[in-house]
Length: 167
Image (cartoon, rainbow, N blue to C red; front, side, top):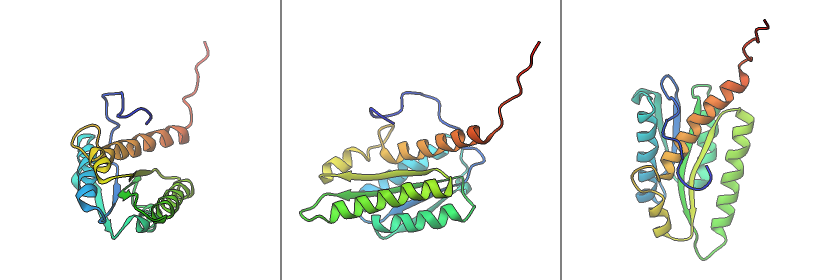
């Protein structure tokens, strides 16, 4: 979604969909808020609590492996990945953020399943907090809604078009 929060008010339907939420425990004060935003969005969109499975991993580097296991299990319609990387004084930030984002992008293409990127990559803790606020600007919420929307996009692409009636 470009330019901030979604501009439409209608939420993509989540009823009957199963969603895995993979959350990094590192920077938990941020990732817990992202998780709350994602789960709240899924519930508002009609997902049952039992259809949302949450998996915690130690850090952002471990997100792609858990996301792969969820995506390849065949049990889920989408995977929402949540984490927080804050730039430090060493190149560690660049290595982890690059490897993780590439891994998730490749997984989504390989699994043909929405794998939403709700991992913050910020310069400061304050920037991360700004993106984990309650409400529509929560990046966990945005990731969950993007995953739902992509489920519907992929289903529409896979569905044969309705026959045209010629008169």
